[in-house]
Image (cartoon, rainbow, N blue to C red; front, top):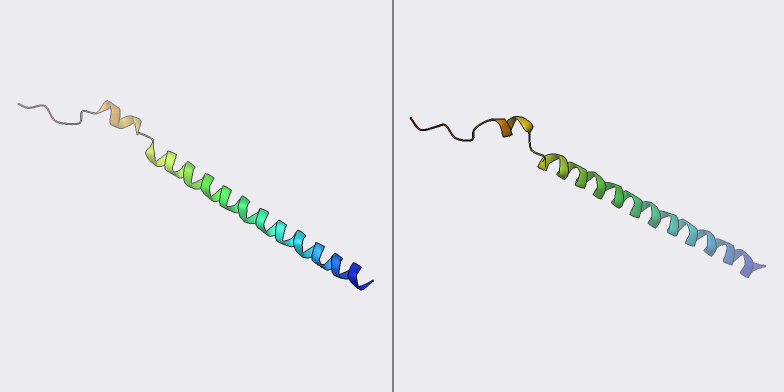
Length: 59
């Protein structure tokens, strides 16, 4: 009976560890996605800049 209880405790611990690792992976993946989205937003060009001349014309 002792071995069975020990087995159940170890099984529960392994399940807890697997859940914790899965949660950590999902958090890293979500953080990476947020950074990627922020980077893409930052790199977009503003449409008003494309209409304007970059340098003034020489007289």
